[in-house]
Length: 124
Image (tube, rainbow, N blue to C red):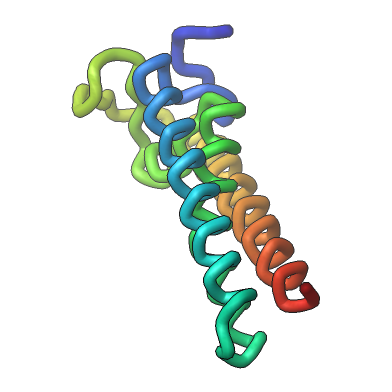
C-alpha cells in the first residue's frame, strides 16, 4: 500500500481510508434498515427507489476506501496522508486532470451501484 500521492491512483492515507470505510458501514446499515421498513410498509413500491441514495453513499465509502482515493479531494485538487484537515494542494494540471477522471469513475460506479440496489428492491 502506498502512503504517498500518486495522481489518479492514491490521494488519501490510513486515517482518511478508515473514515470512508466507516461511512460505507453506516450507509449499508441505513440502506438495510430503510429497505426493511419500505418492503414491510403499505407504501407504493416506487418508494423503494429512494434506497438509491444511501446505497450510493455506502458504495462511495467502500470504493474510496478500496481505491485509496477520495473523489471529493480529486475534484478539489488536494490530497492528505496525515491527520484529517491537513490537505495539500495539487499544482500540476496533468495531475489534477487524472484525479478528476478518477473522481468521476468513483462517482459513476457508486451511482450505478445505488441505482442497482434500488431497482432490485423495487422488484422484491
